[in-house]
Image 1: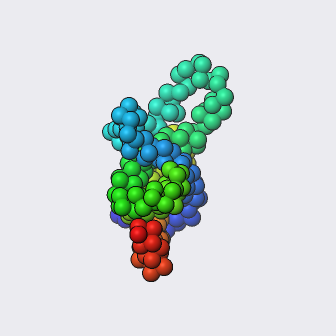
Image 2: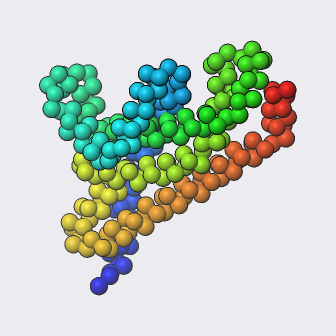
Image 3: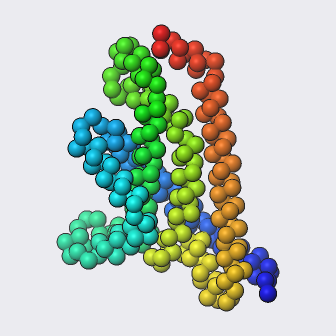
Length: 240
């Protein structure tokens, strides 16, 4: 029989795990965002060997389960003596950072693919206008291409953020006590898996709902900024 009292009593303990979940998600998103920029430009590179290398990277991380990627980083790196003696070992011997690295590399593949598509969707006339004004490549990307690409790709990126939050549950497989890991420990104590995991699901739902609302507001702000008369006049002036 369902005992909702156990679900309610589990929430404070699950909240501690949720804190680690949010912390992991934030670090993964930052890592993925930084790595996604060179991935995106490599995907759009004119040199075929560069674009193909980026495509292989994206295919590798999009075509294999994130759990296996975490296992390869956490368990696989320790198999090599030379790696255990390297400067990277203090990072990779910790399950926390292994989860961040594995999920960050995974997220960079998805985010880089989104950004690459958004860059390709930037109107060519705007880019040509920037070149006509004498902007070099870096200024062109900074002031014209990237701002527009962010607005174009932001809706798809919102889904990636929510997927990242849910993907942090895989960190429980390498001993991290985040939200899912906390739920598993509570199940061992209470022998009430349905009630505990129901509470954990409710907490995940609350987190993703708040993030969805927050990013919807950001998306609307970016849309209004693109439709702002001053911004529109500036765009017209650049394109003239």
